[in-house]
Structure formats: C-alpha cells, structure tokens
Length: 359
Image 1 (cartoon, one colour):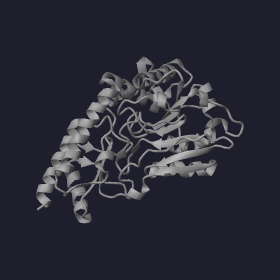
Image 2 (cartoon, rainbow, N blue to C red):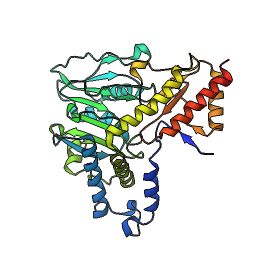
Image 3 (cartoon, one colour):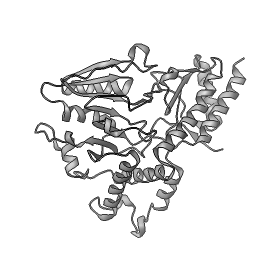
Image 4 (cartoon, rainbow, N blue to C red):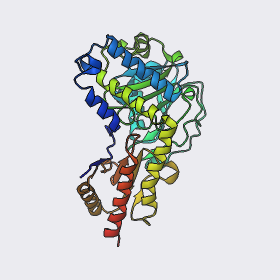
C-alpha cells in the first residue's frame, strides 16, 4: 500500500530531490565523499552555499537592498535574535498575535526589551485573522506578524497589504508558497522544514540597513556578524543547506513560486470542498476568509468518531492527520511538495468515512 503523509513539519520533500540526494549520498560530484564530509570552507560546499542564496534571490525576486542568511536554531532562535538586534533605547517592538507561534515570539521579546501586543485574534480562539488596522508609531522598533498559523489553519491572504517601515514576518510555514513583494519587509525568517528543505537551517532575508553590530549582542547572535561572514561565521548545517538548494532548484524547474500558488490552491480546494459539502459532518476550524493553503484544519465534534477517523485513515495508508492538542480534530498539512494525488486521496477517504458514519 502506498503511504500518504500530511505531517505538519518536518514534512514531505520532493521525490526528485530525495532521488538526487540518494544518488549523491556516498559520491558527491566524483569526490568519493558525501557533501557533508566536505569542508564548509572548500569549493564544493561554497558553490552550493552561493547557489542556494542566488536561487532564493531569483525565486523571491529579492532586491539588492536585502541580504540572505542561512542560520541555525530554527524560528525559535529568531524569536530572541530579532529583539536582541532590533529593539533600541526608547523603542518598543509591536506584535500581531494570530496563534501559538506569534505568542511565543512575543513572549521571548518581552524578556529582552520593551514589547507590546497591538493586535490579537485570541478572542476568536484564533479561528479568524483579526483586522489589520495598526497605525505605525515613531516609537516602533518593528511590527511582527506570522504569515501562516500551522496549528489553527489560518493564513494572511495577501502579504502585500501590510504597511510598516520595519515590518517583520515569520514565514516558516508558507514561504515559497505564493508570490509577494519582499521589498515591503525589513526582515523575513523561515525555518526550512516545511517548504524549503529539512530541519536544521533557517533562511533569513534582512534589509541591509538593519545590519548594525551591537556591543551587547553576542557575535553568534548578531545579524551583522553573520552577514559579514556570509553565513559562515561558524560551521553551517552543510547537509541541510545542500538539500535546501536542491528544493529551490525543484521549485524553479517546476515553474517558480507563481506555479506553487496555483498548485497549492488546487490542492487546498479539494480538501476544503470535502469539508464544505459534508453538511456539517466535518467542521472547518478556521473561518473561510482566513483559511490556510498550507494547513487544513477540521473537526468532527465527536471524540470517539475522531479516533475512528485516525484509525481508519491509517489503515488506508494516510498518516499525519491528528490535529494539534490545543485544537484537536485533524490537520492536513499540504506544503509545496505534497502532491495533488495525496489531497485527492484524502478527500475521497473523507467522503467514504462520512457515508459510513454520517447517517
């Protein structure tokens, strides 16, 4: 039986990428070594490192005003690095709360400097995104948003509508999923393990005027230091960046970010249509206007039936659907590399399950 996975992350990598990595496992470009056995100061790895940066620039149309960094520590480290580098004397970091990850980012910022939550969707249990009506202030260090909320299944529909001179976005779960204007953002960060590659590397896109060294920030946590050293201040996660480079090449060969959006809408529609035509048997967690193209969340409203759904889905070779404990129900994570056929198989299973238990 073919297995289908909808893991929230780490998640599916493109099959072509895995096949190439397998071919090069013990002999990268005739060297007799795996790439992770090569020195990060050597030409073989440096070529990959620069290719990955160039491909990211090309795919996202990153302007020369911004630098690209590859760091470690995941998005969670960025929760601390951002306020450490960007909250200056007399300035306050502003946060938009739309789920658990933005809450964690805000909590970390409060440990480091003056921080304030200026918009929140918590009153709706994060089922819908709040109205984005914040007016920038001269006292702002920056305004932080989370573009997609994996646990609740909500996503900002248009990333080009936000206006703030120092706008920061955690795009860990939807970067490369649809086009947007990078120039609108001062800093973008994304853990790789959804749309960019495996865990272990975090992509940072940062406006160069923010690359200021601070005496009170340790070198390893300084954006300026990492930029000056081209993300090679310390040994980088070589294999993770190697795979990230292959994934970016796959996106490029597949038609780029615009084509990813077309595919993602088509995949999401298949599952959302199964929810909407169920006449209440399945209940979408997120309100329709806030629905994510990356994480489809839904419930059955019956804990015993939900356990049966998981049991039978796995018996049918479909895995990774159990929802986060804070929401319950189910979550189908359909990032870029999840194929259309997997979503169609899930929708078909949902229809059959409703026919069996919905009477």
